[in-house]
Image (tube, rainbow, N blue to C red; front, side, top):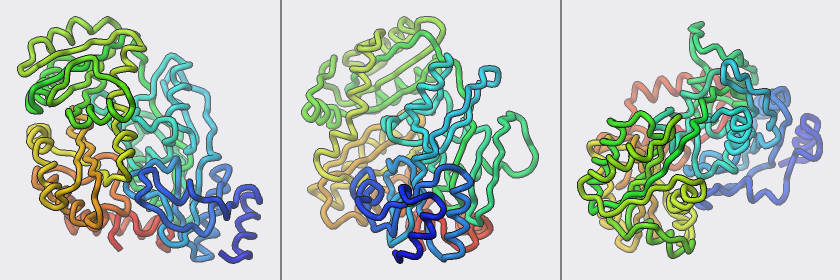
Length: 450
């Protein structure tokens, strides 16, 4: 990038916040499969500086890549060809918790972990949670409409948003942070920006709803002799209990890898499939949860945790899946959804789908059973990325599923968007993109194949 342009950006955000060297953590994504060169990284301090940067980019004809914690899995948060990365890491302000409305306004750079801690200090809870909570940011989770482990009870990120502030691709600021639960004054821009992957603008602040922290929490790990039994039990639990926070499905191959890679042990004997279930309520749910699991067909064994340390030990078997898979090399990662009634069949067959294309690859499947969101991880793929991606995504669509559940389309899946969206839908999305980003400077290459 020319010195003159660097000087122009320095004039906006200051010399300490325009970075031109040592950019690895901004240029390489979390999977380490997607990387590119940035012209530079600019770190604005607030919404006004973000707006000035976007307006400058329009005049200069420079493309921008918004970036939060850079924990995405589809290449949507890293540069691809000399763009300016707009890091929101300095937008870390947290407003006071409004206990009456159970809401709080936070900057886009606040991590999910810090939002959790803020809510907990007020006796409340932020309902979105996932393994990357320590580095993933609120802005990034809004941009991708992140889900995580608690969707079965509380819904996706979009369901938690009651207000947003953002800079559109035009450079205009839209700010609607009153937090009114009922506000039908026209289009819901917060919902539109949520899941737009930085292609329409840059979210700078969000007002989110909080939920009551339930005092009694119980977690169980159940082993089953077949995947179908685990899925049927999950469905039974969700029908019988309205206190289910999470229901995670794991397979023997994944738990075995975690045990060997991390050195932890499952408290129950090896099984074909595992269901990790967590409930929370005002009263102890151990008896109800244990009774349903104990009567489940195909159950081999169950462990119920009631103390924090016991719960942490069970959750570690699930949370360590991704780091353990990464020890085998950068995997291909697919975040997909299939209907619940097709879930067991998909989980059981997707490994064969991959093997038909890449015989030496290893496939690991785990994820959020209660909403049908599975994480398909494929290791050992050499020069067959496109073929494996095509096979997996077409298998998902054949089951009536979605090629993206919560991480977005990014650049990885852009050429397959048509599998889930009609020409009319894609045309409507392009029209919105043109209206809010008329010069095409916001995250080019993401979502749309061109």
